[in-house]
Amino acid sequence: MRTDNRRGSALILVLIAAVFLIILTAGAYRYFQTSVDSQIWTRDRIQAKLSAEAGVNLATHYLMGGASLPTDSTPAPILGTEMTPFVLPGDIGSVYATVDPSNENDQVTTANAYMIRCVAYDAGEEEFGIEAIVMPENLARFSVFMDEPSLDGYYGDGYRFDGPFYANGPIAVFSYSATHENDVFFYSLSLTSDHYAYSTFGPGVSAYAPAIGNLEMRPYERLCLGAPYFEMSVDTIPFGSDELDWQAVRSAAQAGGLYLNSTDVPNGSRLALKNDTLFVRPTAASTATAYDLASLVNSVVWIENSVTDRFYLRSNQLPVFGLNMGLTIATIGNIYMSGPLYYENMDPEDPHNTDMLGLMTVNGNLIIADDPGPEPAWGSESFQITTDDSLTYCGVLVSLDGVLRAEDHWAPTPTAEFRIMGGYMIKEEGYTGSSSTGFNMGVHFDPRLLYMHPPFFPTTGNWQTTMWGERPNMTAIDVTHGIPEY
Image 1 (tube, rainbow, N blue to C red):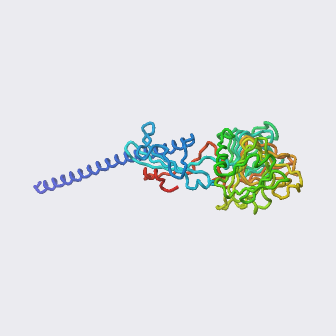
Image 2 (image 1 turned 180 degrees about the horizontal axis):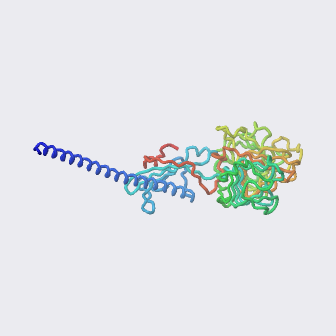
Image 3 (image 1 turned 60 degrees about the vertical axis):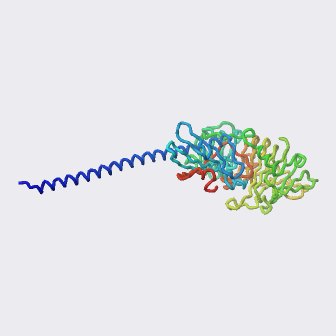
């Protein structure tokens, strides 16, 4: 038997269920609507991010292609303006980007670095910012760079290269010893060829790994890891007087450095560096002329001579009289290394150490001078040629069109070591010794060269990205004014 009360209860339950259903339907609608909005926002955000990445890459491409760099520390537009962004091709949005030179770029021993800031807008006006630091690749970062390596000689027992070794082609490597304690040492080896030659002369046997025959390159375990320590078939890096902007070094000397001609530095002159002074002595009978380098606006010395001319350069035997500043000396002709050359501060791990020498010849050679024996007529030790034993020569040595070699690779006897604290970049390496005479080359890489270089030192046409960071909330005002400060 049913009553009216049961009918009322059922109706109430139906109404309650309907209310819950309406609430659930509204909630589901709101959820799906929010989800759609979130998806649209996420899509627009991702598009803006990708557009910002494209803007940074395009700005870097413009820099590599020769776009003008800012002349001071103020950010300069490179893509679009604050009010009129640059429209990217393919309807992927628009960007506004500036190039901001590091505030430390006026410290010429610091590697030139530039911050690219980019804010992007997608079609829905969603914004996203990215910043990146890019740097031109400086030659000083190599312990050894060779543009046209020769297979007429070889690197063998006793050779040591503590920094990156790079060559645009194959090199010859060999070991006479059955053991490996003295085999050639490479911190890293990169060649554009797909092999190196295991040989003492000529093509030899093509080798593709760090060990072959008597040879086991050191440190073997690290080189066996492959890239970036042992790499074949790497990209070619352009080099030479027709590729690098060496004229900028000359211009810097003319604009505020020390510009000397062949009258100031006649052929055969002997030069000595002592602290912040350059001494030039044309002959044994002449008086040395002293040039104050500390007062230069640009720490660059250019010696204008001919390709057949030469000058000799060294410092005192003691580091206390070594170079105590950042300096570049450049010339057209030949540079003869006539004895030890030190920095006053010989600690390359000292963060405050800015003692650094760049030595460059455009068309001449870098030559280890032959020791003629005692030269009392030249008097001071700094003007003597003393290369009859192992010696240390501090600096980054560059010959754009020439070679590094010994004037006499049969001396001294027995074999000595020519230690370079820095590195050398050359077209080709000539003979520095034989199996029992002359010099083994030992390059002790200066770790500061990973982020510093000598003043106004030439760069390659390559750029490196050293930092990449997302700044989602970056605004156009930040891009214009360089925020945060760099």
